Image 1 (cartoon, helix red, strand yellow):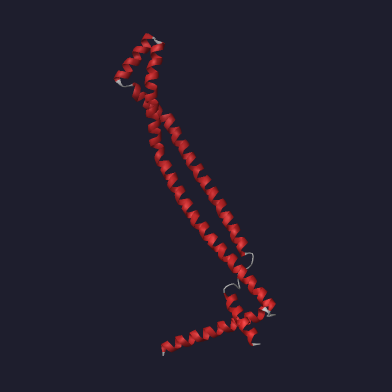
Image 2 (cartoon, rainbow, N blue to C red; image 1 turned 30 degrees about the vertical axis):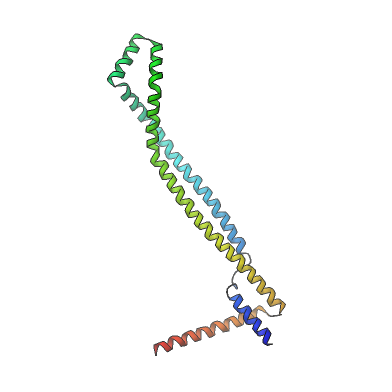
Length: 199
């Protein structure tokens, strides 16, 4: 009888930390981890799609407004304008092609450089937000992984506890009764300590 009582008390203490963890908890936690990982993928895709739309808008304005203004400014420079007018007047097609072949790469380089300048703030902001999102999701998934491991471990402890209870022929109701008695006695002792400090 004394051995059974010791076993019951030991199992009470063992079960105190695991009594309320269902065996399905680890699987549920793993499913939450999978859902969070899927949300991360969707969130990042949405982020990139949003910034793609913003870049498209910048490129549209750049193509429709900045490039024509740049071309007008470039060809209105005195030296360029005079030379171009001369080529048009003389109707020398070969010379015009050479003129454009020489100036085309410079104009294209200027246009690409300026486009990159306008897009850089968007690209930088996108990278910063992506880094922050990845960091946040890493922390969430790490916390979920820790929780899943804890639940899996606790679930095994609870299953072992139940197996030992069955092995020794001890009912779960009896264990719960011991836990209730221990809780009540602990509450009485703590109340007595508090009252002792007040007097």
